[in-house]
Image (cartoon, rainbow over all chains, first blue to last red; front, top):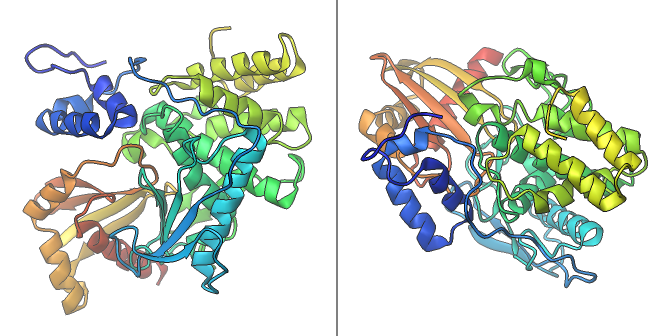
Length: 351
Length: 97
């Protein structure tokens, strides 16, 4: 933690970040203003549990169903763009629009039918997607309010072609509305990992694949033909998804001994996510069956319970063990295996 | 104008880029690139705040020959990231041959 003395610091940076994640519009605006006025605040990243309302989605026995909207950004970046398809509309015949619509529906069904959650915020938030964002944009992202999908350019094909990518982006919304994990360093890597885990589970459930049958790849099939690789990431074997002349070698570690200490990529959020990703994969293999039923439930319970935007891997590991114990009973095989997988990937935590 | 442009983050977390000389670009792209690469525009783009809760947006690191560096997020209202994307695509196209 960097030193912070008055008058240089009035509001601690971790509080600013927590407000950015959890505050209302007025609070966020104030936090942003303070942040702009004092760059030093943004440079400091400290792990603290802030005083803030914690959002836990109610578990519903029945949910009303999704409200989806898909827009065409027509190569621009002003979102959302022109409305192309709303809830209940027939398919448009335009593949990106229909894929975004169907993928949002699969993701809504996953969270509602498996965990009783009504949309990303637990309160029926409209699932808004924009397609054809940017010109040849090699990306899909969650902008804090909606999904955005590029058509792909020099690296990817159209990004709506992968249900794991759609599930990944929507899961970022679930994380945001579950109290949030600050998008930097280990908390950011956990945010990324949760998006990968739930993105993979959405696709596994859609395909009816057990943990043993699933590929555990994120973005399988979206790389262009001239890119050497199978996918963006592998939960089963982090570090093996691609090996390409331009992109380099997949840098993800699966063990803390290879943890990447880097300032790039907001502290390596897409790199170090390989460690919790692999822990989840191992747990799913130990528990067998469908990964979303037990392992996924433990991860979802943990997300609803952790209440710590700056959580470290150790914090998260401890929470998953506590959630396994609570869900399946103390000393259960679920608790024992959850404890074991963190040891296997080198994450230490208080018992 | 010769600059180094690297793009990181995004859903793939891929870091790609390299060095590019605007003299090697089409006149139209070179003009837009040189405008976007003006220090004042890069500074303004770099100062744009991120949206709360946003994830998987690109980050562009630009280094001028002077050694000045800028880090521009992809989520703001500026059109600079779109031009930087075009430069990264040119770099990839060149490297792919």
